[in-house]
Image (cartoon, rainbow, N blue to C red; front, side, top):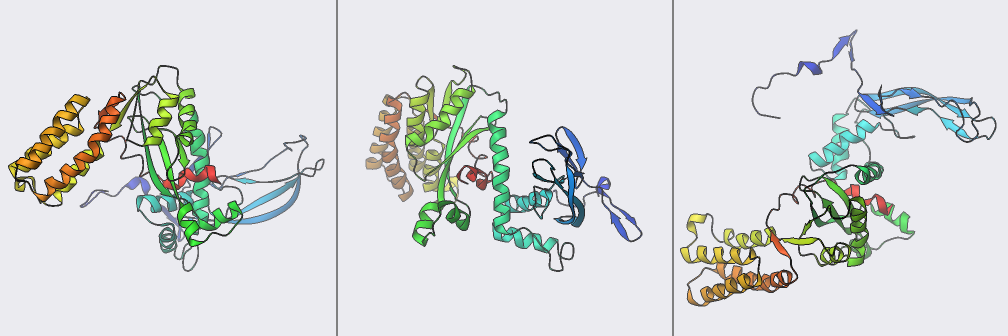
Length: 387
């Protein structure tokens, strides 16, 4: 929201009648039709035998929402033939949950848009519902919110694998470390208690994401912290089966050995570029740690910096060798700052690495904009396949 005196949005006004605020409920999409939230759907016949259902009992459910606590009269049903039980479906509430889905979604917005932990998200939820759902407020506990994320992740995964996507023949692959969910849930899953040492090893995973240049995520794979080539092959096979042969012309990634090996096996004919943006960033970091502005950098250091940048951007082995030789000459002949000496040491490290990639036919890629938006996405969404 912008700053200053902002006009009031009159489309969001509420009506007061006899001391009560009248709030129109949002609509929820169900099977291509919109229904008001908290509408009740009653089953009519048995899914198994087709018999007409009989009323078994009546019950009042109390649903906690951002609008307050909502009482709903629901019916439980029984099939007279196969004795199978059914119940009314409440629109906007998952199964037998006490919280509405919109309340969970609000909590998730607090968690991710506000960059809150699971624990702090609950405290904030209790604060803004004080006197609304309970005297001290009430919000989903961390475990409930985390489990809701897993259910949403399953739906998101299905959507990712079925959506029609157009792209400019280039795919981008990146990996990142993320924390693996809730300890008690994992202990239940593996059937044993975890020591602190075991938990630290198990809680960190890596998620590898395949996306287009337009930042559309196509698929992902959750692996161990340092995955093998074999761990990523299923991800690339799914991508290969999804698009016609020859559609993918280039794949861009960093120098991750697992990605490189998996791409080589699944896409042997596709050009593979490695992103050198972070290498350029690491060189710049050594200078801004010592100098507060570009104007303060001596001329000899600027020349050295530019030469190291050209080394990183070299697209042939001959060019890379020529640049590293110049850098070594600068190191011995010129009076340089500590920042340049650190940058030269780093250049020596990446020289052999980049040359090995160039010999294999890789080319450098500097556009890092496609990677940045991928990993602020909600990390817990990737753990559904472990539960």
